[in-house]
Image (cartoon, rainbow, N blue to C red; front, side, top):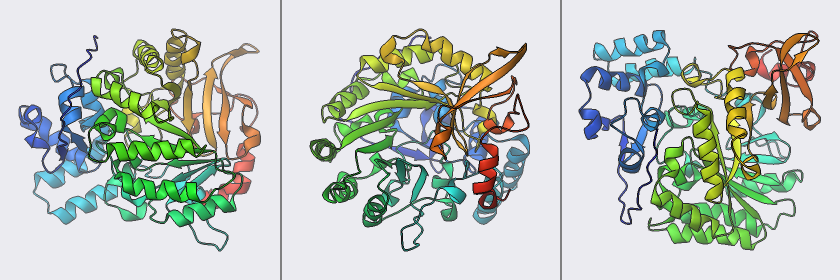
Length: 448
């Protein structure tokens, strides 16, 4: 496939599309009614949102099931057959809004909305016992912060593991308004060096809103705070955030304040496909963001139907390095939402990673993966060696709930179908080395 670069439109106007008006998109209106209905069925369960930049600049509508189309628009296979039938039957008989909502919520609760113990194990609390439901603290050095104003995105990725943030089920949301509590928590936990702003997408916020949070951290002069990270898809889905939006320069000024304070600013940019790096707008946005002193690291899950292609990954990493970004992670698709549709078996995922990795120079080999953000920690598959005549899968922790687990190799039975840590069985012994400690420390919270 040839990926064409396009020029920078200097006068963009944002237009958003949701399930309420997706048929207004000319390319969707031209599709058969059956296909439109399929999108409606899936879009009533999993969130859908797109914008004119994605539609006009990133999707190649001449290619059936174009990767960027699948990345942003609902596909029938994203729901299991019985779930699809359940929702379709409600819509076909004209069920009212309440019935549609109740049916959607019934299905959603079966899709593991908060994987990896996020709700049970990761919600921290202040010294006075106040639980902070707008934060997560899983790994010692890093805490995640979910500003309440960032619980949406410029467009939604169809694979997104944070889909519960967007479907109107408030009890499943992480969100927090109070920057003061964030500061207090980081002050109370001197082991924290990194604060990660996430969502949704923090770059959906107006600059003044983001500045309020960032300045609260900077003004507190926290001696342990070394890095502020921002997890964002804005460079890919709306690069004009940093170019021509009314407060684009104000946002860049916030970035400059962070770096001038001596705090490292890391933009954790989500790029799922080479096409997202093809426009003049994204090239210019990357340039001006880097000009503030921020560093851009790139990451993406490996996705069936979208990017399960080693050549594409190699070209994407090469392009990212050329543009001044640092390839960071290739993830396995999390065990939530439409994992059955997007998941790539771990053995094949490692093959794709290795084939791509060996095609890039050392500057592109900063990337790690394939990595699973599982309940015990970030687990990477390192290969499929043969030990004592038995072919096995070799894995190790990149991050762990217990830091002592990091970089310890362990082995699973060879399984060409396994797509997640929970699918694997120990190759030697009765259990993996970390399982007993997980059971002792967290079993009650996880109901095991």
